[in-house]
Image (cartoon, rainbow over all chains, first blue to last red; front, side):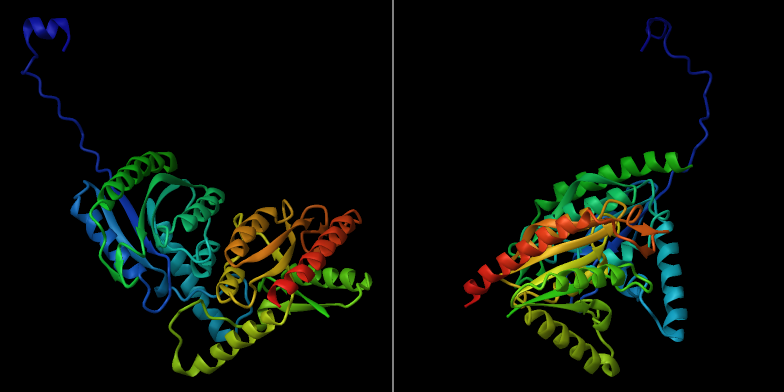
Length: 210
Length: 187
């Protein structure tokens, strides 16, 4: 408070109506595994519930399931029928991913990297993702962290700003029998930090794209 | 007899990998390495589903055959030369998916790399090193790295410069030496 305001008190007579700008952010939670019985579903659902419970003003979360887009392997030879089906799948995948301002990739680690299905799906994209942000929720013996670091490099080329904090679930301690998801509470701190980073960077990059 | 599989790691229609793999095979054969046999393994011949994906009844038999065929073919080698492009600074999804089906088939064997891309596919190579590390494959030092700019016309007609032959020889020497050594580990 300035000197004059202290002396004379803040003027209450003029009420300035600030225009309310609706800032919205759409974040896609991408299920990065297509395995029958995958843990990604439970983890992705947990992430979705956790995120929505925060009631972040103006932020909308949505699950995007890789399984819903039967993408062929990039460039492979296809029969006529497969060709038309594929075109629809690729178009839908592209449009869906383009609709978001940010992403949370939920992915397991296969041989110290992301799996082929997720890599293949990302290879179809580029402008849809440019100048957007992404976070990561991994699971594996070491929290899927090597898949995360692999993804950082791929996203780097795709001009996606990957945030610092990731959520890393251990197949040993956050699952029963490596298949029933029972996440420990302490992950919530990282989940909040990651979401904070995605939201803050998300808005910044949205302005950049405007 | 030492058997080396030249794995064509791209399934793209019109892929440059074919020309590069053929060049690698010809170059390797011309060396007349005693007791070494080279063979091209084309990923496009194995219609592998994405690992673990649900497969409709009608396609199940075919999928199982493809997976079995891929496993048996890869198990038959003592060493590998992965020929691959670079997609977004890493190997493509088809090759990653295919390698994810393997483990015992490739353990304690050696592998070399022939890449092509704007920077010789080297980032795909470094990505593959880490994957092969987990698969207990000894990846040799030297790689052959073709530039899409200078070793191809219009990024599609393969016209490799001569200087790559030095690396190709070095890589093959290493793959042969390591494959022989690791064969003794496998017993």
